[in-house]
Image (cartoon, rainbow, N blue to C red; front, side):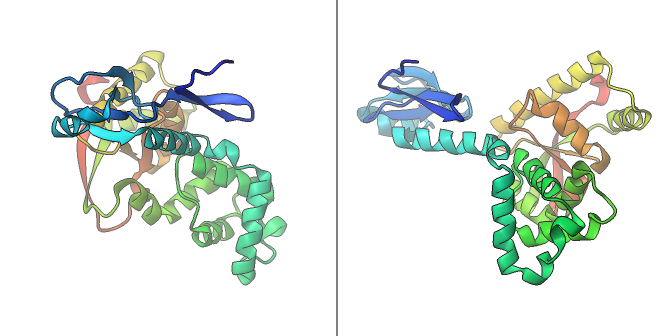
Length: 284
């Protein structure tokens, strides 16, 4: 496939997973949602997050900043896009060999803790799957001590990687809260209506699926809530009952990969939670 001089492609195992344009010597003026007026240049979309943008000449750089645009160099556009794609596909890039190498490194740092853990307590396959699950939802895996402590406590009775992932996520609640909200005391999240929550819990417990109409409604309301959250400068996080987290995350991730679905047990102590939008209510 021929690539234009101003274009670039990001490949993983020979398959394209991202592409965009970058014009060296020009600047990308990105509208974060509150920029005023128009700019002379080539209209486009910022490749990582899809925001409206314009490629402008250097002479318009200051004017664009005054009008409220975020102005970045071509090299920054590529680096940001690459980093975004890397986060998106981290779970696929993290194979069994990487899991083994990571465990070997941790074993040298924490020999007593990791002694006899693999394969006596849990298999490499299960550890790999748990770490993949965390990466798939952008949960940092730097704190391997906490991850392995949680697995050591629960792996003897529980072998299901999905259940073990849920346990590890709760143990990592400080890292998860920090990752999405930084040091903010008040965290702004999207909530789930109590009536809809009960309905979903009943459907899950009975083993029945969601009615197509309800599923579509939830998806549309989630999309609207995420748009509002991003327009106001907030992070797209949906906070739900712990029992529903995994189900809703799998369901919504297909259409809203930028949405993080967290459970009420994954928020660290001392944070004030404010619901900015609600999914459900009178609309479900």
